[in-house]
Image 1 (cartoon, rainbow, N blue to C red):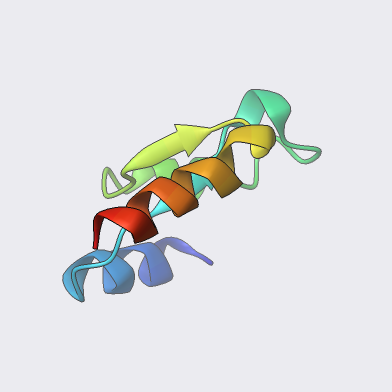
Image 2 (spheres, rainbow, N blue to C red):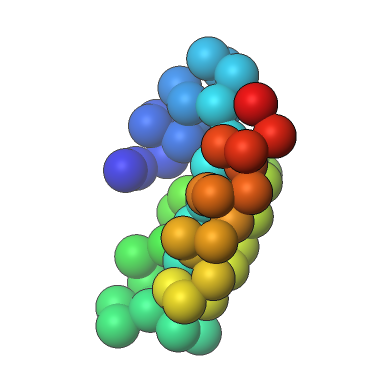
Length: 59
């Protein structure tokens, strides 16, 4: 998802999770999303699934 997608998700009331660049195979990939300022969580890959689980259980 690019920067436009991140902004669209936030505009629709969604939550944006991006992989931590330090743990990404291609470290430059998450940077544009993070640069939007609209990212809720920047997490290592191994933590994303549990974060999604927590978010879903809250709603």
